[in-house]
Length: 317
Ligand code: NAP
Image (cartoon, rainbow, N blue to C red; front, side, top):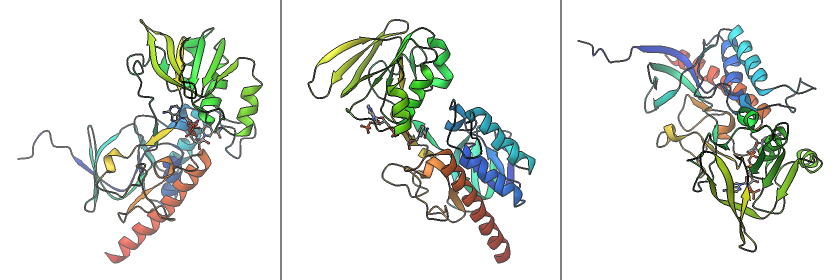
């Protein structure tokens, strides 16, 4: 007799894990190839791009477009051709044999082919107070939490594009946004640097790292250390926004796919992983470019190659 707790297995040609630009571009191309792709969105609908205030470098939108709007447009276009987008998250995969098995909390799927676009997650500082004050002054998303800091003082940690872009966004709400960077030179691109340096609400503390986040109910200050002089100071602040890069979401694939030394999925120029029939696209496999356009391009390429793979599979059988 079948175990009542056993999940019913849904069979699919192609499953796409993730719903950022790579996943939804893959869904569009796969849907137009009549593969009836299923997209399991993951916890964050439309990925990191979906939580971006404004995207100014995706061609076709000369005035820029908000991340949530662009994400929804990607989704609507893929759905128009038959892609199914399910708000669900893969928690387990078995890539050791075909069809591949994908499990979510409530469902079990078998798929002849997979496209992994699980993206990357913001990195943590790993200092005392960071976890305790998460959601009480510590944040990793200006677009999500900026509103709560109207008229307040904020620090932003990091020196890359994200730190400046989010910092500039936060100046809409905060009295001041102080960027704390561990070097004396920013990693961010020139346009963002110019905007940040000419914004009167933006301030900079150089050569400095955050050692601790402190407060009572909410954040009140950060303990800083100058990496050149060793001087330790206390800087009062109402919020700490952390933008120090990302780590790929590949835990589920460890031991099943070859990953590089930073944990990114290794792919060839056809987006093929080390397991035939499993493709990867976007930031999960790209530590270099990490742009909406490059991720979308990789997603489209992965879907084209998955289509070829499935056609060949059909011919062989
Ligand atoms: P990123 O470019 O890797 O920058 C991370 C920043 O955090 C660096 O300045 C780094 O310092 C600092 N950092 C790293 N670990 C740290 C630690 N433990 N403590 C203190 N500081 C630390 O990451 P990102 O800014 O998130 O950008 C990711 C990618 O997305 C990039 O390719 C970027 O170009 C792209 N992006 C583009 C846009 C845009 O085009 N508008 C917007 C956002 C992101 P160091 O500089 O010393 O290494």
